[in-house]
Image (tube, rainbow, N blue to C red; front, side, top):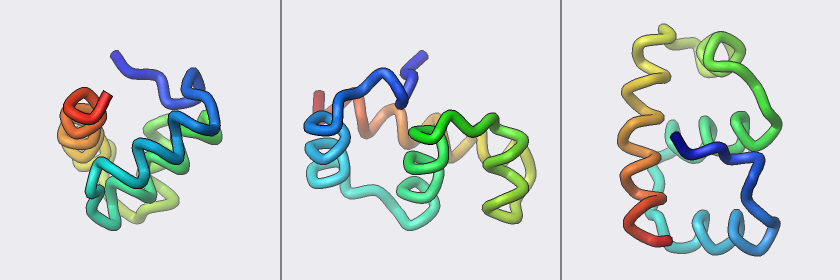
Length: 67
C-alpha cells in the first residue's frame, strides 16, 4: 500500500507533474497527503468510501508507473 505522507515534497511534486491525475485523483492525493482517512476524504469529496477506494486504486497504479 502506498502511503502518500511518506513522500518527500520533491517526490510529491514529481508525481503531480507526471501522473496525469484526474481532478478526483488529485483531490484524493492532496487529502491523503494531509493524512486524512478514507472516511474524511469521502466526506470532503462528497462520494462514498467505496468510490474513494476505487479512485485510490487507479491513483496508486499511476503513482507506481511514474516512480
